[in-house]
Length: 217
Image (spheres, rainbow, N blue to C red):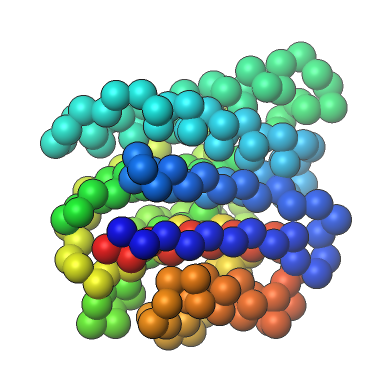
């Protein structure tokens, strides 16, 4: 497994409200994006990632039970964001998206809440969306930390040697269309692919923070 990651504040935002997690030895990767228009988005995304990092150090089950582990990890992160907000009025309503993947040699489990995304690029060049946004018309219907029920979507995906997993925030997908994402993701080197995706988002305006993780199987 080869992994590369990068996050940038972009050309417009004053701070980076994205966060990422790469625990290569555990096969765990994640991105989180603090919700725009909500307070303390950077605090929310960081709290979620810290929680996911702590959970990734725990013993994981095998097989189908790993899907429940992914769900539980995201729900634990949801509670961590709520706890971090506490009773602080300046943090009231803070929330974050999250997409979490646990990768193995021949398969992966992926779970998400919000509109950060996961894609799989086959060795043959076919791009497949692994997540479906929780939102419509720019309005997020689910996020970690919101005072409402959170129901993560979790999927199991078989992978082959040479396939690539992409986790990203909407700072990429709002700036670069999927055909271009597929072309850049297929670069020979995973770090070059990661850099190419981020640079394309910045070149197209970079109006949001942009975070990318690429894993090659």
